[in-house]
Image 1 (cartoon, helix red, strand yellow):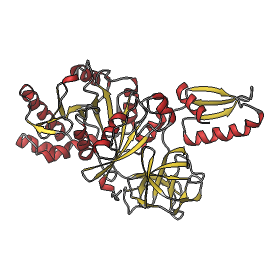
Image 2: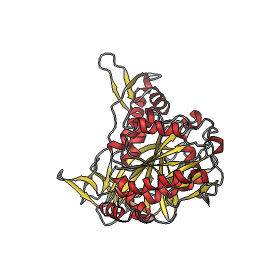
Image 3: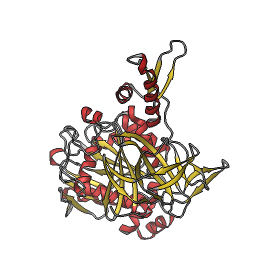
Image 4: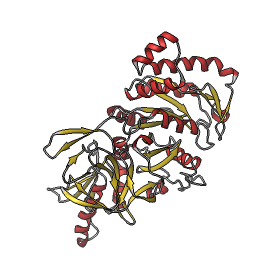
Length: 456
C-alpha cells in the first residue's frame, strides 16, 4: 500500500444499533474498491470484518474492526463498531480517535435504542456526522416513516443530500442533490432526475444550499446577494457547517445490491475533515501542563493506543498517530509506563489481514504486535519530549458475575487471565470480594461478560 500523508486520510467510525447493516456495508466497500474479489456474508460468518470466533457464532460484531478503503486518492480508515450496547467500550474507542461518524439507521426499524445511545456519544465529542438510511431495498420500507423517526428521536438540523428513487423492492438509486442528476444501479450510472421527483429535488437542492451557507459568513453573504452557490462552495460550506455541529446530512443506501454506495464514499472524502482539518491534538507534558500541537508530521511524536487484543501471534496494539511519523523497527517512550518500548513491524489491518508498512504518518491508523507491557490508553512519544494524551472516556460497569477457578492450581492463572482481559478492555474490571473471597468480574452486560469469560 502506498503511503498517505495527513491531508489524504479520513478516519470515520461506522455506528448503529445492532442489525442496521454496517458490516455488510463495509463488505460492499471492500468489494467495490477491489480489496476483496467476493463479498462475504455476516449470516454465513464469512464477512471480512467479523473475524473473531464469537462474531462468526453470533452473526454480529463484538469488537471494532478496521478497513482502509482507497477512494479518490484518499485513504479512508473505516472503523466498523459493534451494534450491541454491551460493547459500547469498543464504539467509544473508535469515536475517540475518529474525525467523523457515519450513523446507520435501518430503513424499516428506524431509530432504535442503540442509535440514540451512540448518537449521544457522538454529540458529546462534537464529531461531524452523516446519517445513512440503510437497507433501502427491504420489504416494508417507508421513507416518510424513517424520516419521522429520525426527526423525533435524534437532535439536529437534518438536510438531505439525496432523494431516494423508489423504496423497498423498487429502490433503484438516488437523486444527487449536488449535481442534480440520478445515480442508478450498482455501477452508479448517471441519468436524468425522474419527472415525479423533479419538483421535490429543486426544493431539496435549495434547502441544501441554505444549509451550506450556514457554515460560513462569506458564503451566507454571497447567497443573499446571488441567491445561489457553486457546487464547490456548497461542499465547502456544508463541510464547515458539519464541523460546527450546525447540520447533519442524510444519505440512502442498499449495500447488498450495491445501490447508493459510491455516493457515500464520495461524501466521506468530500465532507469529513482530514485529521489536520479537525483541529490540534491536546496532551500534557512532563510538567503536567496542557499543550497542543497540529496533527502534522512536523509535530512532536504522539501515538495513542486505542485498542488491544490477543492475536494468534501475540498481543496486538491498535495505534492512531497524532504527531510526527511512527517508524517500524524503532524505539519510543510509553509515557504511561514511563519506559522505553520497541516498535517492531507496523501493520495496516483489513479485518484480521495484516500488511506490513515502513511507517505511519500523522493522522493514520495501524497496529503493532508484541508491544511489551503497553496497554490501551497509552501514549507513545519520545523520551526527550514526553507527552500523555487523555484516556478514552468509558462508562462504569453495570453487570457482574462471580468466577471460580476449576481447581486450586488454576487460581494464579485466573488472576493473570483477568488482568490480561482488563488490559484489553477497559470496560471490564475485576476484584476479590473481601467477605466471601469470591472473584468478581464486572462489565457492560451479560453478553459482554460471557464473551469475556470465554476469552479468559
